[in-house]
Length: 263
Image (cartoon, one colour):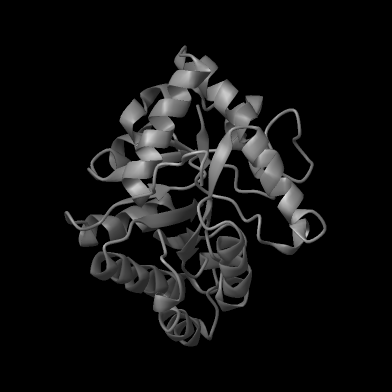
């Protein structure tokens, strides 16, 4: 039995003092593969360093986070494009739209999102979508550009019934469930039950959104087990069954190799 953390920023400075130890703690908790969504050009070296250190268990994504889309977004994307051949990226991410903090660059966010979707189609990679206070804007774009070449996941999914139903119209899209599922006020139990098991994957979004009982503290990939226990309880299935299905789903979406102890 093993899990895949499909979304972790464990490469960030929050882990500079104990990054290797944090990775080992994850492995000890049966989280054997960790996916690393990029933020902007400055974080690429950190992502690549971790991928090189753990070549069979850490996998990088290439993308510009919507909160980092500013006046120079086109320059940032050109710089990222030049890094296409630096690694075997497993996704374009994280990308999308964030209208929670600042709506100044809403049009630029839309343009950056569209362009990176095209990268995904051209490179045959899934997209990892950050959607905060922006489901409608994201749906408008996806409804327009959706075709059989596009696949991906709504990372840190916290939508409701309507959002689930809309996303299920996209045949190759998944739902990333993280620590928020353990928060009582989030009321995600019913939503999780609506998601087909073959569309469910797990994540931490470390160092953010720690699950109960670590809420308010730095999140890390090893804590995925607490989210997994919650989801298994909500779905009334064994933890081993959840591990099998979510691992299979992540491997399919991101075309990940099967982890074996010998690696």
